[in-house]
Image (cartoon, rainbow, N blue to C red; front, side, top):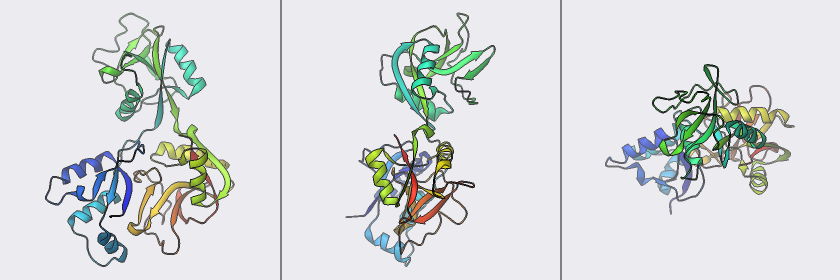
Length: 322
């Protein structure tokens, strides 16, 4: 049976795999969609399944890989920029005015939903799990002639339906999203009562644990008491990590980042590839793991970049709540 490594392809890599699979030597011979229920915020979860002889060749560095094998490794090693989810969206199926919805979101989460791009838009619409809902409030509202986000975000993303905003009834100063019409937006009276979508910033889902544990012990702790060691898929999550680690009692703090030694490949414990990275110079490239497995940690001071360490170091660590 072939050894397997779970990882997630970002959209461009998935497309490349699909295009390549039509050729005579398909990448699908080695890369298959995973049946694992593990969630991904960045792409489709796949399993890399390589014959033992290929792994032996890689490990011993004795023979060149053929085109298919080389493509497979290149696919894993090179991850182009992808839009991963920056926020968690929470659909609230209660009819409220826009102001009431804003107050609820600020009390329970972060604020009414802010949307930065189409990836966010799609995630927000997927969160609306009631097909009978026609409109939901989002956090965009009008102040005089300017549209602003409730959380003061500077996002310039807009997704108005054709002809909107039109202020047809006068006083249409709030924004509703129509999930069943590809999530296009309307300006609406703020006194209308609709369900709504809140967002929760990712740094609110991070918790610093000030115990001193090895990487494996930290992983076990997070999975038993929270969800997992944190996976940092974007600059947004990195900024949350940077805020959290300021209170650490160790100079570096464990992340959910581990090195698959045979292939010298870094993966997140969530099963995803390292699309976004923030390595300190000289780290995250060639690793000598013959004596001890290497894991990833973030510096709690300075520029707060990532470094590679033996897994036996005892450090503080960051768990994800969700």
